[in-house]
Length: 441
Image 1 (cartoon, rainbow, N blue to C red):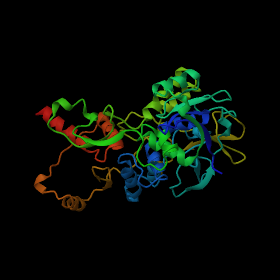
Image 2 (image 1 turned 180 degrees about the vertical axis):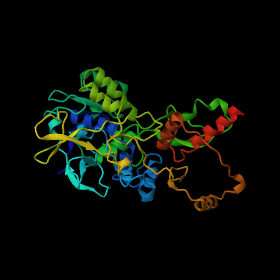
Image 3 (image 1 turned 120 degrees about the vertical axis):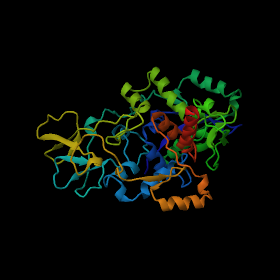
């Protein structure tokens, strides 16, 4: 039977909304683990909820990786690295009571040389022997202890409807009730609900699209629309371009944004509340350690998922140390001085067939060129396909202009943000280009 978590909900019967949840550490650990998931994994996991569930146009980019021809990738494992990549904290998160990550944490060894290299990915001609590494030796998790937050019998937390997390106390509960304007306590009802894999995935989804995920998941399961007043609007100029608005006010593009009706604030659900809760929990001493805090607020890429000339300043985790012992077991250990053990290296899949553990490399062959649609559908470059696209869009050739857009770290961040909210994120680069032309003119 699949693992589940029970939580108590305090429900306002009059408005049919969750006021807050009372829970042990395991549910809080689940929520905080959302920050350790790479975007590609989130996109794929959402396919388990519904084929229509998507974040911006990330689904298009994800599908493009799946359908690109094999010969465009640097090695046979590069597609899997992007399509089924691992998270850097998978060993740590393996202790979660409910873990939504479906990675099997298996490794593959070279059938011709068992003792030199391991690979995370099997798509090499020689790396076909499937093994499961034993990481119990580095476990520091006692029964009943938390993964990210402190556990134990006395550790109880409250989670609000919009995913603010705090240690449970009478003062915190009263503060939540006052903030929501709840005066008549007879309208409150306590309910116990079960959180399984589907509910966890729905919470992750709603945290990115709704301001009331607890209500949406546990009380309004049949509703497709979020219960709070969030809507999608098309605006002339995205908030992402606020630094450049003054230079080209007459030149605008359409970017769909998620807004809160009450204050017109651009938002991505309420995931920011959960993120800010990490700092407050740490300040109050409920995050287990600074290392755990760092895993959440500054997550790193899994080993070898970085690439050369990377624009975004995201660090890559160092490869783990493995040993092979006389009983034919691979174990992740910090100490390799034990008798009859020696270090086993983790292979960089992007540099195969070179047997190296150094980082770097690229996913796609340098000679390959691609056509990227405005909705981030990626296809191999074909001039014929491009002309057919112009025809499909009913474009006149006299109305088509070629321009070169420079993409630096700032533009890469803008593009990432737009791809989470918009179906036309490449317009961000177009707006930048237009503004640069105006400024230089």
